[in-house]
Length: 122
Image (cartoon, rainbow, N blue to C red; front, side, top):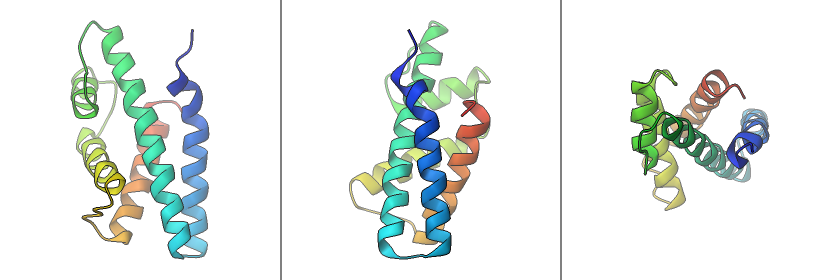
């Protein structure tokens, strides 16, 4: 049976891609908030898929950061430092702390979209 994360990942990636395009065309607050939610969803599905892949190798990955670290060690992903930055940004945005500028957040969301597409065959 295919995982929910794997089946939902392509739609989540398309949603983030569209949100980024909309924000680029019109950097309104609502469009930024759309990026934030789409990014949050993509990060959630991506780390859960990494968790499954790591556990399929007989290892444990109880948290997002552990899943990323183990996936990097197994060479399942590239640029783990960006993955970890994205998890931190996602956590901060969920709790409404946005510790980085909107410009940096949008850049990070675009970087993560690229990595998800590259590493997870989205």
